[in-house]
Image 1 (tube, rainbow, N blue to C red):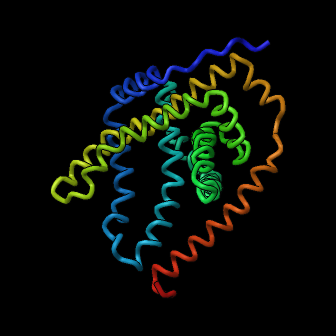
Image 2: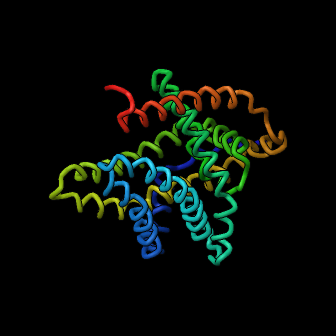
Length: 260
């Protein structure tokens, strides 16, 4: 019989995040620098129409490897697992699934946003942990999304609070970005805050998963095996159709192929 559920403490999540950050400060600053380097080309050439789209695509392809690598590194540091060259191989094994998950989530969020924004926010909450689960558990895309939905629904407001808190702490840095004189403060702030934004969801998932195992929610889910994903298919197909139309329209307009 499932145990009575204990609410996850978001403040405790942030305390553990800061503790891990401080213990491996050099590593996480290095991760922030990598994250910043990947965005620099887009920022430098954002006014060059012929380069911007290829840069965005190449950045997505590169990030689909580095993001799993960073998540695996953080998780193994948190669990005191020795880092070795296997982490590079493990990140590569997740590459195509991570890229596919990014495409699927983008399609669903686009569809949700087209449907008066609110559904898009709801989907964002439900699938907030999807990328973390895919990397740590190496699950299939739809099974990853099912597990994210299960965990988010069972701790809905905690997920909202965590996501909102991470968005709020990222806002101060963005205030300096449009001011050329103080733009360096944006980069400094981003370098400091990025590890927190990356660490917190991983610790949140680990703690949440542990609690759900104790309550029997995860056991019930695992016993059911692969659940039907028909509802996801009906979200993904129109989402991709709308996304393709938006990309085609913006690309044509961007390169001046249709009148303004």
